[in-house]
Amino acid sequence: MTIQTNQLLGRDIPNTIRLCIRDNFFNDGSLLNKSIDTITTTKPWQCHNWRGPILAYGTEGLGIDQLACRDLDLNDFRHVADFLVTYRAMLRSGTTTP
View 1: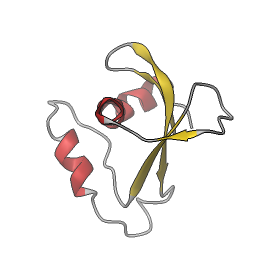
View 2: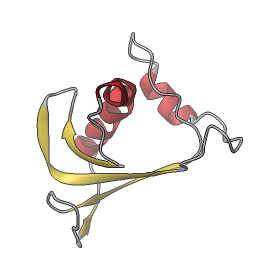
View 3: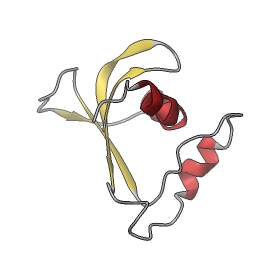
View 4: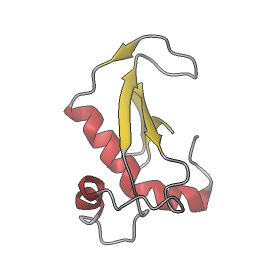
């Protein structure tokens, strides 16, 4: 999954954040990701049921084929957390990017 826009804040972010998840986590017996559950339970609406391991990494710039990786910081953590809590609504509206 690619994050280039923070839907909750309504703005583009300066660099790309990529999330790697298990595509079949609902069917392969993956357990609830407790770290993400702690983030998503802070919202009054129902969030996506994230399961299994998730890896987040950053690349420089926007687009689809960035070559340079970069370290994530707390600003990036905010964008990842916002993505995780709004993912279900984005699925319904069709605004997610694989």
